[in-house]
Image (cartoon, rainbow, N blue to C red; front, side, top):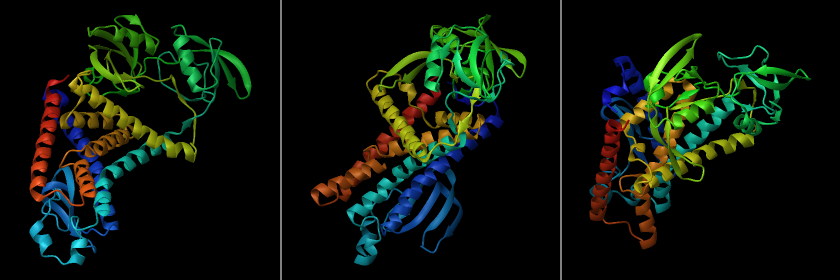
Length: 445
């Protein structure tokens, strides 16, 4: 992927950059606030809370003595605690030696081990909390689909049936019962591919049979950043009507042809706002996570589909809300760890690891698909940032926690010389990882 291919125009560049900075700023602010507030609860004083690096654009000092500032380079942030030599929380040994015992207790390096460990761990933990809250709030906003499947609103598709209306309960399709959405999706896999099917519905308490479209048409409900579909110009709401001149009423039909394409160019006839538009694109090889933790490589164009109707929803219960967020965050964390393992072992392409350009592109794409898509992306990225920071690499929070474990086991912290060497190694590893990910942004399709 060429760098210029990320942004077709200067306006899109500003949009992508703005979305990236906003997403990153929210995640960094939450991460650093976790360090700050837990440190304060543990009696550790913060001298500086900075969002960004470099020249200070705005600052103010609160009554706790903490200087809150926004810096010119919005690609990170830090909390500098009392007794820190710099933003990386290196120990200022000379300064600590001149402090009395009470003042030293309020420094990061003079506080009890439990207080230091809690303060370090709080950053990633707050990232996970942010993710869980966002996931649950999205569920609360969108609602939980009512069962049996009930039409909330019909999508605008070229083959929509005038015989189906909002409020209709779908009892069966082609004689196969659909008591819930799990059964509906099972039925979809068994249905014959046809533009019109027989629906048994319940309307205002009356049972009747009407005709309706294939329930899962090739309707674009989402686009993956950097995908063939997005690069070709497809938009959410488009409906793929023909593929290589042949009608494709079913999403599974489109999926099968794309999977078997071996990457050859495909001609798409797309219905958009009542008009037909032609597109040409070539599917790309993508590594997809599997439920068992493995991966499979398939040819994809990078779009998600959906039902020809939006389900009628209800407000989810408190139990569903409390469990949904952690379940989503855990799934993303497990998938990320599995992906990293499979990249290291060579089972999947290393192109799955993307750097700042790839993340910026994804943030812009998510923002272009609506605010729900954008905040969902923020939650996913927040989980990834929290997970990355727990890696046992010096410089990262996980590395500091390893030092605390060493201190707990031996009764003494690592020496200043050992810390300098280990932090240098950690910085080198982190820079190498970032450079490799940045290289992937440029070379990978």
